[in-house]
Image 1: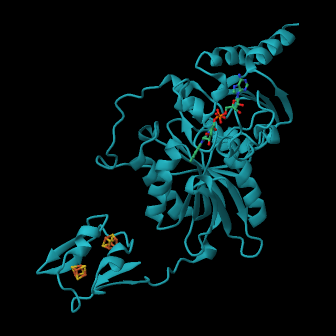
Image 2 (image 1 turned 60 degrees about the horizontal axis):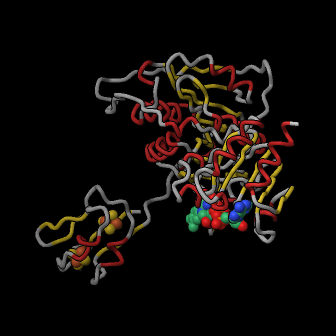
Image 3 (image 1 turned 180 degrees about the vertical axis):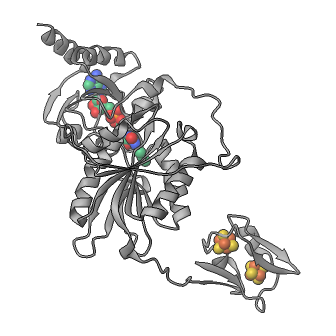
Length: 393
Ligand SMILES: Cc1cc2nc3c(=O)[nH]c(=O)nc-3n(C[C@H](O)[C@H](O)[C@H](O)COP(=O)(O)OP(=O)(O)OC[C@H]3O[C@@H](n4cnc5c(N)ncnc54)[C@H](O)[C@@H]3O)c2cc1C
Ligand code: SF4
Ligand code: SF4
């Protein structure tokens, strides 16, 4: 979208200057001038009382869509270990690649991370684009963006998937802007249109009240960040092999503007809800932080972890990193205990794909029983100790 001032109509009232959210308009010789910070949002067009600003469609992009092939998954690694979401992306990426009839590839950046390529092959990647460099050891926006953007230019993937982790959410938009393409953030569902083979990307919007399905018709690659924990992990195929394509990496002195001084790990980061097979989750019904101590006893007995509803987190009983739900973590364990959790849609959105759900709630009418496989109506203070006792026997 291009935005232009029609000089003959501009009266120099400065209304547009005050209204531009990006401070992109200045006044020169009593005429509005639109600068390079303009994002084409169109606010000034609406605000100018004299219709002196017009918006025009830029000429249609001339991207040759047929040049783009393959589905790419960003192999996010931290300290030389793949993030769990990568296996989920490979699982989903394989389905998309099969539907389109193309290869599933992975792009891996780091320092001495070539060993991870085998793991990527075993989880379904046909090819791994590998960038090894000491400057890529830890994630930094400039370095990763430069390397992956170069790879995208050279090898032209049709689809690029990233986990919607802190890193993926930072890297995705930087790459999309460099590639001048579309990105849908935080997707919970991806499908291929049977007719035109384009990807339909669905994500919750407006606090989950609306599911938006978004397509990127004229630009490539089609990019999505995908919410961790939503897609099924790829099955491991022991000994499966693939092709490694090394990317040449070189950096000039000022290419990377950020330096990592220290990485501080909060205790909360140790919680890996997405990996847990058994989760014992508590909500407002626990009545206080000490309720989680009882839940922890049950979780320890079962080899699981504790989690919480947002209400319990908001009450300050437990850290946010334990929160399950739409604004917390999405989980799909084998067994999910919901203790003193009412079953609000925002909570259920984050745990409904659990294999088995056991609800413990005083109120038989609580909506959590609608998604539960087994329900116990009762006070958790009595039910959980009884469960622990039964397990001890
Ligand atoms: C935009 C938005 C995003 C949100 N995101 C999330 C999210 O990510 N995750 C999330 O969880 N919520 C989220 N919420 C909040 C959500 O709407 C609910 O408010 C929240 O899930 C309620 O938490 P709760 O079930 O613990 O508490 P409550 O709804 O208060 O339920 C407590 C339950 O405990 C039962 N109970 C009481 N005493 C006992 C007892 N002794 N033994 C057994 N049962 C007992 C009660 O019968 C009741 O059913 C979000 C809300 C909004 C608006
Ligand atoms: S289109 Fe938006 S960003 Fe551009 S000048 Fe107008 S108000 Fe500012
Ligand atoms: S609002 Fe319209 S008339 Fe006023 S300065 Fe901006 S372009 Fe000119």
